[in-house]
Length: 82
Image (cartoon, rainbow, N blue to C red; front, side, top):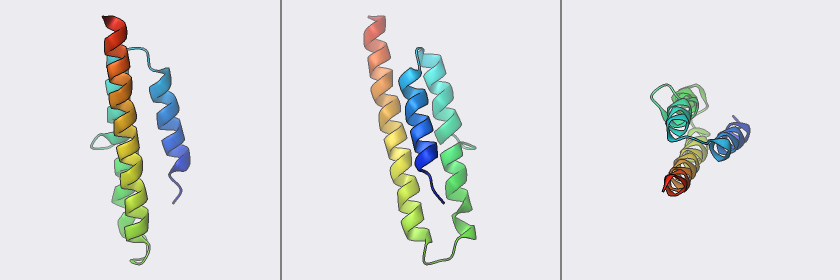
């Protein structure tokens, strides 16, 4: 389960976002209840037990990176509005 392409896509989409409303849509797309990264976590049960902790940690790290990128972009957009 390689989440790097998904993470790269999220980061690219966040950087290109120009409006706060669009940024919120991206947050839901990747981190929401049915978000792409959330769905990855739900698939952990199908992995062998030995792989679950490592893959789970990678997915959680990716989620944190996306959350940080969204927050940073939100601050940038808020500054631009001022």
